[in-house]
Figure 1 (cartoon, rainbow, N blue to C red):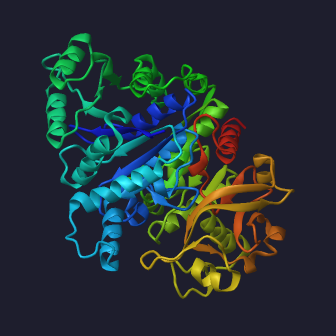
Figure 2: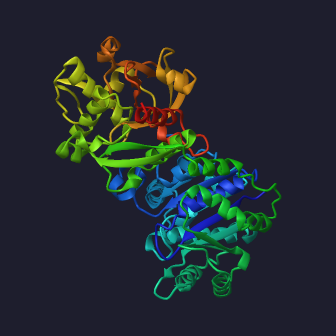
Figure 3: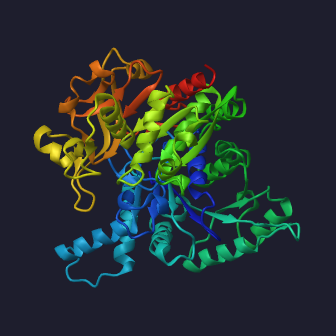
Length: 540
């Protein structure tokens, strides 16, 4: 049986929500009991997202197998049950690197290396490999039709219609239908021009999804259908909504999933979206509201903390608490002090790299500890919690991290590769540019007499990591007698994974990134309990 593929392209402008739309469509198809997966093709020349500035590109999402990928894979995992991996995201940089490596190895036997067929063949191979074993494979092509960077990807997916047979390929084009207020009209011309651009490449879309500030009327849908040569039932209107979790229902209500099943000649029960209905109910009927301060250094672009923000919202959903997230620049805390935190009910410090803004984060941690405000530290947020405790409670004034001061006197935090010489930590990814890192899902053991053991309701968890500095655990053997307790360690007991302060209402920090496993249907235990604690603090 041949694979069925759905290719999603974007037109007119970027930031129309291709990732959310793709994930929502996949959620509807999964609700019809199809085994689906999603692949993201990124046209940038970087090999992966790992070294890209979060202020430019947004967060780096980490998969279970340790791939550093585009943040859209986070959208995918939040909407469907399929876990993403390194084979679900690849870039122009990866494609060209592979082709150049093969050329140097002599695999092409002296042939002239060209975009067609060599580059496009590798793209097709990766799409087929990534979709193996699934009923339907959705493939999102990054960028906008007309961009020079995405042309090899578009050519490759055009060829797949010939290779696989057009009956196994659906092309979906997402475009903008702008509303011109002065004329009181929705304009379809940008969509027509975008489809014409796609046709010039040799791709005739089967479905057009129209993004707009309002529903697309019948007359405009007829016009788009006529001029773009697409059946009227395949013109889908996606107007702006107050919640992305309503999009699966919007897609189902317009019969896009039925159209796809008929096209591929697949039979399946109707989509059961009851879990999404529950999410929408929880979101629409809060019983309270809390303010959560996220102290970070990449706050100019909220997408830099996308998974953290979503995980906080999911924690709110499960408590039916609305979340007001205040992104606070840590350098402004250094400048203006902790008065910026006076209205928050909980403080979270996420992961990050580099020394900029560290003092502001330490001030925020001290404020949370001393004022008994719920605190959740993630990755760097745990390391800084340890430094703050060492300096201000134990009295180790020069306690520091070699990330901030390479030759510090008391290095409580140091490079994974330095520690690896002694402890043989698993999950190391060597890389000249970014150093050795622990990446991906790693087992963690929780001690019985701890808050995290109660929260998770198990003594063994698997969480995803992304860091290159770790705690010098030899120094922290007796800290529980001073008020800080190590409550989670790696499988081999060599790495500190979780700390907490037992006599604080809620002070937990972890080396891993729990936000990568949160989704709106189930949330994540740490975030759910953190929001519950913040609500208790507000009402104490």
